[in-house]
Image 1 (cartoon, rainbow, N blue to C red):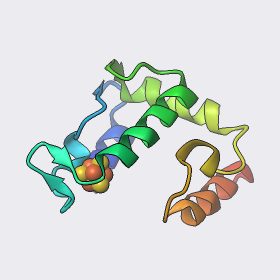
Image 2: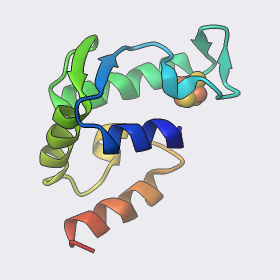
Image 3: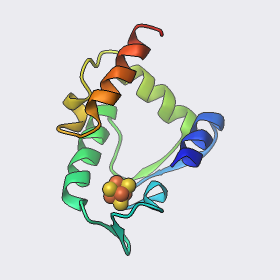
Length: 105
Ligand code: SF4
């Protein structure tokens, strides 16, 4: 995952394919069984919510640069990631990062 995040951050021209199934990020996840995720229904709901929040289609193609610009714009008005992700074990961590970004720290 770290490699993928680094590539997205470093190469704005990188092609990003939007899918609603397992993708490159899932490659080493223990919850990936074959081509499927053990938490498929839950993840599909989150994927759908994020696509709606970013006003992106469920399937398509964009670039890392366009995606980063869009995400930065959309999260400006967001105060709680739970509004997008729903209940999530990691939401307190994401909210701390969100607050740091909003305050310019
Ligand atoms: S939990 Fe599922 S969707 Fe998330 S990384 Fe693992 S396999 Fe992919």
